[in-house]
Image (cartoon, rainbow, N blue to C red):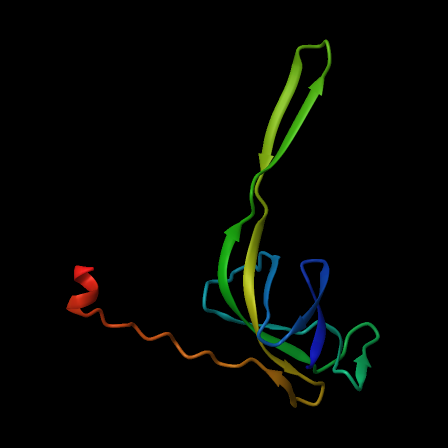
Length: 132
């Protein structure tokens, strides 16, 4: 199974094709949009690995954005004792949920590709099942 180490949002992630990942919010991104990560630090599989210095030129990772959302609220509470001074604040960090589709090597060859899942078909309900 091939993997790549990408850098986005000031963080580094080890990704595999087909993997769903939660990253810092990508600017100007809408759901179902395709994005490419060009900052690839390393890629490889069980046998070989290619490491960049600091990045590998020509290598890229393609992904689809599933959704943009916000994390749970983190409460910040500051209190100064015996001063009758307190402050309560909350923060919700934005994130993008992405699905990795393809990993490309530096010469443009596809190292790994995500499997396409067939859409689930709707099951028809018969009269006997409705009456139960």
